[in-house]
Image (cartoon, rainbow, N blue to C red; front, side, top):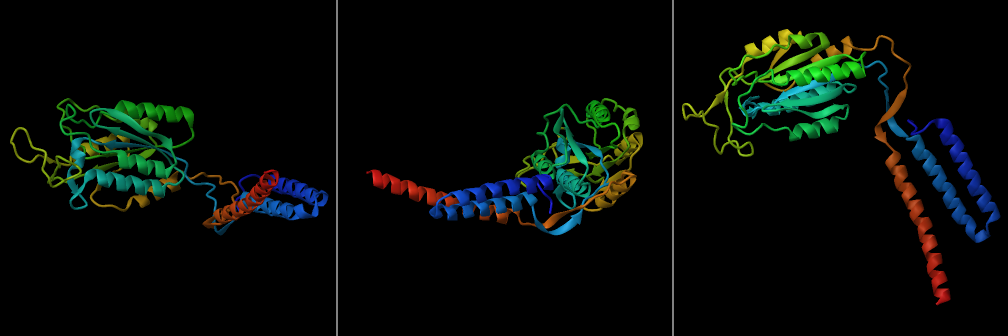
Length: 326
């Protein structure tokens, strides 16, 4: 069992309500006693719901890694190139990898930042995996030629601010940065270094997407075979190529590993390493909670049936009274 409120409160509340039903049954007319028995059953079912029973148990994680993960996603046009896991968009690889990381770090909190023409915090720090999944589904590439050229240092200031906020809010919690990009710069300006962030980062990853041979980018993401983005200089299909040297350089500046991502899988091992490294050294006593099959919904359904039976009795009495007065 995993009570919704403290067990003593459940017991006290149940006994008090049962006492009310007993007194009501004793002092009511004989014809009303069945109604009071019905209400006593409602109290028992309500108490069972408060106890939140279930079949199957799992130990509560008492010393799991509590980490803050700032995820930085490149959503420039080149991330729609079709050269991940065969002929899939690079952003599909980003979505799959981040979903795997979230699943492998159930106690981690994730902040999602995207960059292209502009930098945006798409999702503040959260542990809600469904909310993260919904956010990822809405993150698409920016429109072709929408920006003034891509550059990998564009989210640098925003990530620095977020790291400072995390350090101020939860100074003892490890801070991880996961950068997901193809590393391609089309802006001619010099790229700023990530060195200044290294002191604020406890660990993380730089994940590279794409191939050296390059991939074509669909003009319309919804219809990948309807046409391709053209190189304005040559008039041919434009190719986006992975800049692995740039990504490795950023990884070295941050002091984190670099991984080239060509297919799904394998990130659970990385997450397991983080979990072990940042695990609390002094675990607190834990218990067990029902996880395999929750029975609360069945009890709630039973309570609804009892309430409907009681309401039906009241409606019948009301209708009889109206007939008697007419």
